Amino acid sequence: MVRVEAGGVNFADIMTAQGGYPGAPKPPLVAGREFCGTREGDGQCVMGYAQWTAFAERIAAQTELLWPVPADWSAEQGAAFPVNYFTAYFAYWKAGLLQQPKANAPRVFIHAVAGGVGTAAVQIGKLLGVEMYGTSSSEEKLARVKQLGLQHSINYKLTDYEQAIKDLTRGEGVDAVFEMLGGEHTAKSIRCVRDFGCVIVYGNATGQRSEIDVRALYAKGASVHGLWLTYLSAKRELMADAWEKLSTWTSQGHLHPVVGHVLPLERAAEAYRLLLERKNFGKVVLTIP
Image 1 (cartoon, helix red, strand yellow):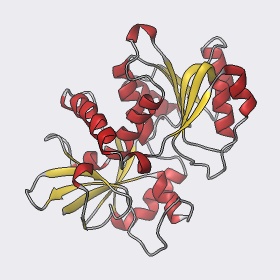
Image 2 (cartoon, rainbow, N blue to C red):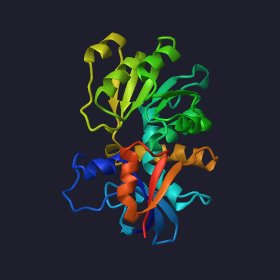
Image 3 (tube, rainbow, N blue to C red):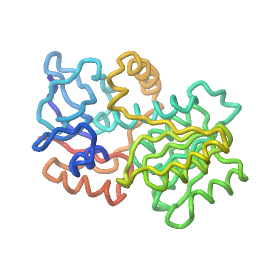
């Protein structure tokens, strides 16, 4: 049993509220997929992942999906870790880049690079020696992500990112794209990869069915991979391996959750709108009374 202090807001929560998240119970239900609080059994500060009820005052959590919070982190930072960093880690894992020698400098294109998963992916990519390209809607956000380690920024409101990737890579494309928009963006992302590249699809922020041109995959020997943390979280050995690496990086001071907005639970609707309107930088966190 964990007494919850803070919960991280995700697009999955918005899709659940809109009735479009697969497997969601019928309302009324308590929302929230990640949390931070105090474990009642031993008083330890822990962060955790759950399918639902992370925004409750108390949650009965699975022991294998609870992790200790670094002593110098706030509850808000703890609540910003599980979904963001496990998703980003598994994206690099699916792309086969975790063991990539730094001298080869693989190229990765990250959509919504100023968001929660995006900022986590940049921090991990920096550790892996990845050359990173990322999109956002404002120059201010892109400048802040560059401070985290992003090398190439693309303002998608000012330029077409497909053309920008082509120009920045001299027509070669990238090794992997981390894609969470859906709709036409999945097909565009495929066109951004180089020969034998891959697109890792981990979300559907537009709410539109992903478009995939199989012929484009044929032409490059490319591939599209699905990444669903809901599914992967049930794989205990896989999650344990991921946590072993993430905890090592965290203890070494390399990973720092980026929290852009902290709002009380009664302002949850406003927190959801920040994500819907792409106004967040990093994570949006709710404090639980």
